[in-house]
Image (cartoon, rainbow, N blue to C red; front, top):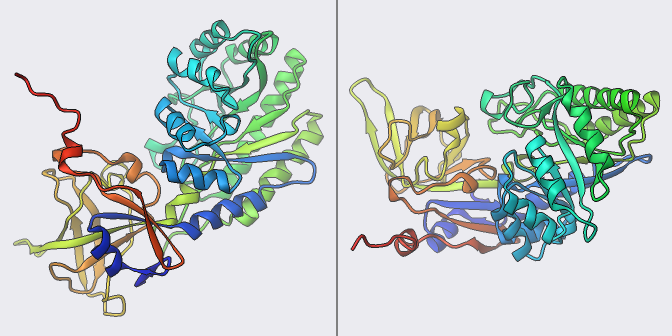
Length: 420
């Protein structure tokens, strides 16, 4: 791969310096349309909500709006970004497991499309804030207890998860009754999410069955027949050549057909279904370009390749033991006969980008492109060691555009104050 979106890696390095986050705009748009096209059913209404925590900037919010998706926000900062981008508030869903009164006030003030409550505290707080001037649409996050096969840090559905309320908790149904009866709340149904980076399709169908059987138990116990359901995201992507690829064109319609069959069998009133892909929209469309600074071989024969980036712009290896593929620009066709550990600039033993990767022999000033870094890289970047955060560019049709400017040292110090 010498080009992304028709722009060479050398051009990008010369124009924007490295480290550099690069997004293939066409790839993002293609993924948006894959979800829009295949998450449809003749008997059900559907909406696709982009989980913005994966990657959000003003430009990204504009792109998501232009593709006809909703936006999932989990903080005031994400909501503010969306509104500054001109994103319609009625197509924003507010999530988060620890909302403040201020966040709920903002959601009500700007008439956010759906507020997803996490727990009784949030529910009580919202019910005190609402009035006849604006009746918000509300969902409740539940925890269906499905053990999706993924990393422990990104499982979100076990019974002791920090998110939502277990469907085994008897208080859940009484809370739903309370919300349904409130005169200034329009309660739609439940939201749930079983984890991230899931590649086993049966996990998604198990999720559908478990939640809709819970809807049937609500109906049986209270007479309440919920009309909407949100199954979250979690659709895995391909990080390595050896990884399986989730067939979205097959999985998405099968999920909806499962909803329709179960709703029909149990005589449920579900008429609208939401999902919230994030990683699966931007993950494989993103890359990080680095310059190789130094190469070192230890006394035990371990080869280190030191790049000009760090865990500050690539935390997922340290945090989740995530694995990545990479290539050396201009050496794509050479034999991969050297085993390298790719390490960064941070003064930290854990500052590893890739633990072991076979590549051709590299030299200082070679360019290294790390693949599938579109999700949770820029959004989790930090200033550890007072390192600056890279620029973000979108590339399309042979042209590139800065979406986020590279930080300067002045930017880094912009909030500091002198002691005296």
